[in-house]
Length: 202
Ligand SMILES: Nc1ncnc2c1[nH]c(=O)n2[C@H]1C[C@H](O)[C@@H](COP(=O)(O)OP(=O)(O)OP(=O)(O)O)O1
Image (cartoon, rainbow, N blue to C red; front, top):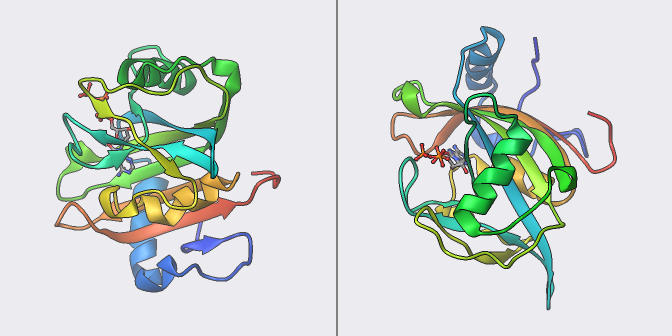
C-alpha cells in the first residue's frame, strides 16, 4: 500500500499543490486504488514539437462529450482489445490528423481520476509523450488543437489534476497518481501523487 502524499521525488519536499490537500484526504483517495476500484481505461498523448521560441505542446479544446470545453491532450477510451499505445495512435489521428508510430511513444505513467459523486466519469488514464510525428494538427469534430509553450499550458482551462502532474511529465518525468474530485466535479480534493524526474527508474 502506498502511503505517499502529493510529493515530488525531485526534492522530497511537498509540492505547492500538496499544501492544499490534506494527508487525511490523501489516505481516503488511496483507498480507491488499493481496493482495486475499476475505472474505464483511456489513453492520452502530449505531443511536443520545437517551436520558434522553444518547445511547444499540443493541448486542444475538447468539443464533445465528457469535459467538452476543457483543454486536453488528444486521447480517449481504449477500444476492445486495444493496448493503450494503440489507442493513443488512433485517437491522435482521429482528433488531430497527426500520424505517429507506436515506437515513438514514451510511456510516462498512469493516473486515476475518481469522481465519487459521478462514478461514470472516473477513469484510469495512460499518459504518453511523443516528439516524433507527422503533421501540424487540424481541427476535428472532437478537438480544436492549439500549441502552447511547454512551460505554460492553459491550466485554467484544463482538468484540475493537470497542474499536479503535467509539468513533471513535460519536463521529461514519469508520474503515478490518483486524484479524487469533489462534489463540484471540477476540483481535486485529494490526491496520491508520485513524480519521478527524467532519467530516474520508476
Ligand atoms: N480528469 C482528467 N484529467 C485529465 N484529462 C482528462 C480527464 N478526464 C478526461 O476525460 N480527460 C481527457 C482524457 C482524454 O484525452 C479525454 C477523454 O476522452 P473521452 O472523450 O472520454 O474518450 P473518447 O473515446 O474520445 O470519447 P467518446 O468516443 O466516448 O465520446 O479527456
